[in-house]
Amino acid sequence: MRRKRVKSTIILVLFLMVVFVGAFGVLYVLRGGSISTPAQAYDITREFQHQSLVGTSQRASAFAADLCVVDGDQPMDSVSLEDGQEGVLLDLKDKSVLFAKGAYERVYPASITKIITALLAFKNSNMDDVVTISQENITLEEGSQVVGFQEGDQVTMDQLVHCLLVYSGNDAASAIATHVGGTTENFVSMMNEYAAQLGCTGTHFTNPHGLQDENHYTTPYDIYLMLKEALNYPEFTEITQMPSYTVTFTHSDGSEESVALTATDHYLTGEANVPKGVTVLGGKTGTTNSAGNCLALLSQNSYGSPYISIVMGASSKELLYQQMTSLLEKINQ
Image (cartoon, rainbow, N blue to C red):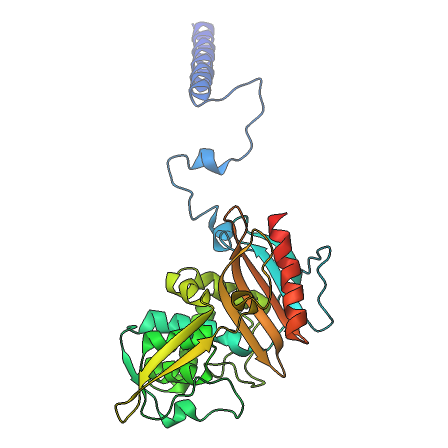
């Protein structure tokens, strides 16, 4: 009797083992397992197939997805900048760097500063606003570029921005600053905050016009970021393509005066020739003794693709436009 019980127990145990192994095998197959193949490598898209990965696995690349990323100097045949000069040529469509020299080097921007001044005017004021010129607006460095406003003159913001971008009037820049910011100091704070928002890590402004100050500086790459932002404002390129502008304003005694202003960009005035197939969409010049001759341009090739080209620190205007033309000639090749 005892032997029968032991035998029955052994049979029961074996039966339960067979049932357990069989159940495990069925469960393994149902879960996609395979005895003959190795385990699959970890795959985040499989593990989280029902969840959106946008903003998780792609978060790092999205930060610079719309930017040209310069990671060093990039030479180009027939393009030569002198020692101490910096510049870039960037393809905005392909986000590619065609030329770069000292893209992150600190430079004095001179009147290229006025790009940010204009953008803040577009963002923070009505172009129909009437601005009264103050003594502060016309008390500027002797010999600097001015429209010729007098204290008490009344000018619209639209007129001031035209004087700023076409003729590079420093008195116009000062008037915009005090109108938009309340004070020049507050406006300069707005400039630096705006530049930081655009990602300008090598820029510090101390004034709205670019007159020389050792603490007023930027980099070619930061200028690219400013010009790229300017593309969001059609009025910027509309104004910066104008070869001339006539401003009519009212003096404090009620009389009117008109002043004809010529653009500072030699491509617009015909003093320099744009390469065939290239269209200059706008930009800004800048010149001081310390900054040298500078030019930052938005342009497009014959296929309509946009580019930004920047040359800083040329020893003469003639050299500046020779160098810029060498860059622009490359965008149709």
